[in-house]
Image (cartoon, rainbow, N blue to C red):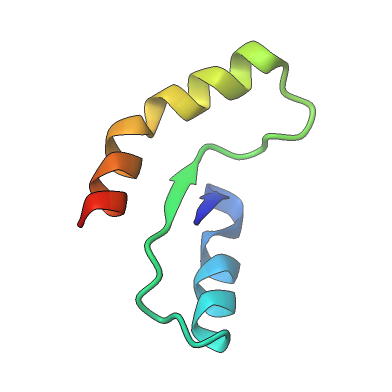
Length: 57
């Protein structure tokens, strides 16, 4: 899952409630709303290595 820093706790709780307490979660800087495309791309670029790590763990 991908979430923002602001919603990391909620994302973890939701995953656990749905029976996925070990869900692999990557977080990007908050917020995404109101950020231009270049800003979103920059945030995505900053977590590529972590996303690859959690997807291949």
